[in-house]
Amino acid sequence: MCAMKAEKPEVRLWEGLTRSDLISLDACTRCGQCIPYCPIQEASGQRDISPPEKITMFRQLLSSQRGARAVLFGQRPLDREKLQKLSDALYHCTVCGVCGEYCEVGINCMRLWPDMRHKMVELGVGPFGPQKDTPKTTWEFKNPYGQPHSERLAFLPPDVHVEKAAENGFYVGCSGAYPSKPMVAGAVRVLQAAGVPFTILDDEWCCGFPLWVVGVHDKVEQFVRHNVDEFVRRGVKRLITSCPCCTTMITGNWPRYYGKELPFEVVHTTEVVADALRRGKLKIREYRKKITYHDPCLLARGPREVIRPPREVLEYVPGLELVEMERHGRLSKCCGAGGGIRRANFKMSIDMANIVITDGDKLGVDEMLIDCPACFERMHLAQQQPDHPSDLPILDLMDVISRLV
Image (tube, rainbow, N blue to C red; front, side, top):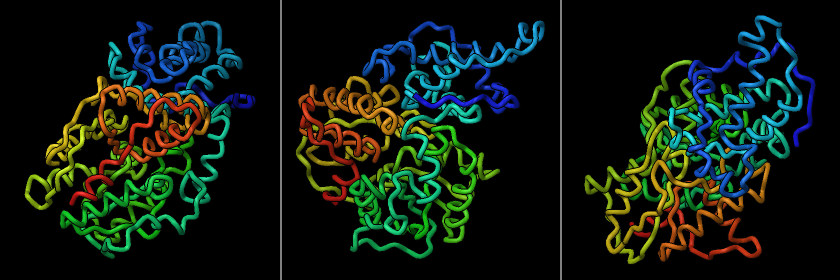
C-alpha cells in the first residue's frame, strides 16, 4: 500500500486530463465486457481493481469537485479512503490496453490509465512500493534498472559496424541494453546483414516510458529533447526502434514533449527487415520448427500497430510453421511485464507470464518467439521460479533470425 499524504488543495482532478480522457470517464457503462480479458483479473480475480471499478472510483471523486452537486453545495474534500483505493487499483495494472479492445464504447485505456496515474502523483498517492524508486533511479542512471550508463552499449557484438553518422538511427532502449541483450544484439546483426547502415548514440538516454507510465512526467521532456537532439546531430532521418515500450513512447509521446513533429521517421525493426526480405536484400536459411508468436501489447495495440511485419518475416523462413495463439494480434494477452507492475507486485506479474507461456505450450509447438525485451525478461524469470508450469523455449525473434542470415 502506498503511504497516504495530505492531498494538495490546488490539484483539481479534471485539470490536465484531455477531453478524450473526460469523455472516456463519462462513457463507461460498467457493462463488464472488458473484465474477462483483463490479465490482472485472470491472474488475481480482484474485481475491486478492475477497469470499470477504477473509472467508477475516479468519477465519484470527481463529482465532489465538479458537477451539479459541487456547484450547489460547494466542493467537498477528496475522500482519502477512496483516493487510496483508486491509487492502488491504478497501479495494479500493466497498462496493456486490452480492456480498450473489448470496450463497447471504445475507451482508449492505454492512454487513460497513465493520465489518471499522473493525477495520483500530483495528489501524492502514487506510485507505490518499488515503483516509487523509478523516477530517481531513471534520472540518476538514465535507465530504470540502476545499471551503469557506461555499459549501455555492452550488448553490441564486436563484428557489427556502427556509423558515426547515418540517415538510419537505431534506438537501443534500456531493457535491450541491460536484461535482454540478445534481442538488440540480434536486431543489429540482422540490420547489418540486410545492408542497412545505422548509427547508435554513445550517450543514449531512457526513452522516458518508465516515468510516463507510472505518472511521473516532470522530467520526461529532458529525456526526449536529449535523445532527439543527439539523433539530429548524427544526421538521422529514420529512427529504427526495437522495444515495444520505446516504440510506443517515441511515436505516441515524444512529439508532445518535444513540442512539434519529430524531425525523423520512426519505424520498427521488423518493418525494416520485412522490407529488406521483399526486396531480396536478405536471405534466411531453413529453420524446421513449429513455433508460435506472442504479440507484445504495445506493438499490437500501441499508436504504431506492428502486427503484420513480424509475421511477414516469419513467412520468409523456409521450413518454419507458425501456429497462432488463440488470442493474438490486437487481442493478445499481456505477459505481466508492463505498467510498472513487475516492480510493484512480483507474484502477480509472474502469474501472468506463466499464463501466456502455458497458452503457448498447449499448442504443441517447439518454441515461442517473442519480440519484446520486457516479455523476454519476465517469461524467462517466470521459468526460473519453483513449480513453473512449462519449459517451453522462449526465444527472441531477431535473435533467431540473426542466426539464420
